[in-house]
Amino acid sequence: MKSTLLKITGIAAASLAMLSLQAADNELVIYPEKTGETISKNIYGHFSEHLGHCIYEGFWVGEDSDIPNVRGIRKDVVEALKEVDLPVLRWPGGCFADEYHWKDGIGPKEKRPTMINTHWGGVVENNHFGTHEFMDLCEQIGTEPFVSINVGSGTPQEAMEWVEYMTSGAFSPMANLRRENGREDPWKVTYLGIGNENWGCGGNMRPEYYADVFRHFQTFTKSYGDNKVFKIACGASGDDYHWTDTLMKIAGDKMDGLSLHFYTLPTGDWSKKGESTGFEEDEWFATLKETLKMEEMVTKHSAIMDIYDPEKRVGLMVDEWGTWYDPEPGRNPGFLYQQNTLRDALVAGINLNIFNSHSERVRMANIAQVVNVLQAMILTDGAKILKTPTYHVFDLYKVHHDAKFVEFQLNETSYDFDEDSIPALNVSCSKKEDGIVNVTICNLDPTEANQLTCKLPGAVVAKVTAQVLTSDVMDAHNTFDEPEAIHPVEFNDFTIESGELKATLPAKSVVLLTLNYE
Image (cartoon, rainbow, N blue to C red):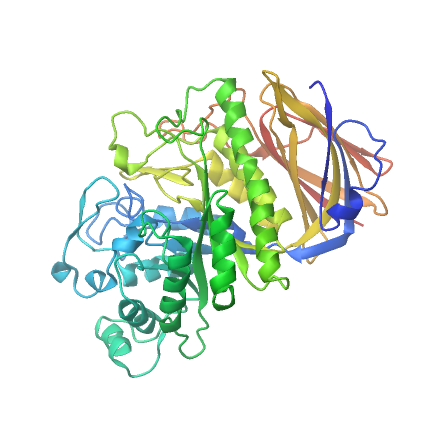
């Protein structure tokens, strides 16, 4: 730690930046009475695609499986996702969505046609997991469905009929077909993605062309009865600000949300992305520096959206994010299976803190992906299951669900490596209806603990509890032989005196502080 950086975060960031801080290194000032937007629980959403073993073997094992299941959906995965209060689940893709024809996945399973998954491994799918199974999964978890409509190879009629099938209570052709297939009542399906990555695998479209396609498709994705459809347009890849500007200019008045996709690669090179384990500090640093770019992207995309939508009616939906490494050796490279380490936990914590701080525009985010793919929450192997470090971050951070963002001021040190530096700490604060304030802190430095002085002006803290996720090694991860090698534990390395909390944050850690005020 060679230098001190100044970072101001909060609703009134512009005005706070004018203040002159005369503070010690790593000073956090929390203003619990200065609250902003509600942090949508949907920021803690997830993404599931027909990719590798996410759906088949991850969620779906079939009714005849020896693995305990409810109507073919494995019970252990459902229970694990219920524990983190999973709010919304995106399906069926991803690139897969724009080749998926929903009528192939309904009706008696023995009559469903097979299909080739051309994007992910060239495997043949039997379509046993379709609309009814996905909705059953969501009901078992207690989460909202987010359905991606096929724009790339589909038609407006196909999209219109799917929405009618899922959400109409009328005695109409598609609603009656749903009833014939065993579901009398319509499902509640609020979130519809109108295409996916249409700048790439979803059609290689120009933004001007896709904007018109979106306007066309959204016309026919209608709301039935009490089911109000929230229409999400395909947004940009990373820092493609021209895409956002064009979509907002041509179709902003027709959308409810605009997506953003950004993956964290240690190398920044898609041809050689880096390993998920066994890395050294140079890749640790590069990964965290890369993921911090999310702050800039969310800020700049939001600023463009503000030009056309100053009331912030349209939500920014970061519906694909997370780490992407080279696939594990010996596995189908098209299945995107990777191990999940403490480094991924820091990536998750950083991004969730960023989304919280932009909750006035960011209304949803969906980490990729929930089981067995990329930065997975859960890994399975036959009947075995483990929770990854990323899962544990989502479990810690669920305290932020639908809480009010709390303004804070952070004066922090830097984490320096090889003549480069990034902020040493990354923070978010929120306040629940009962007045409890939760603070999530990431210490990005993998070798040095960080001293933090947390000032609490104008309030008396009666009780503090805390948890920490950390390890002695950078690539600490859980295995099926040691599924609890890394998990949160109680954190006690802090003191409270004269309105200040002083804590020693372990190297490479995610810490949750829960402050109970008098």
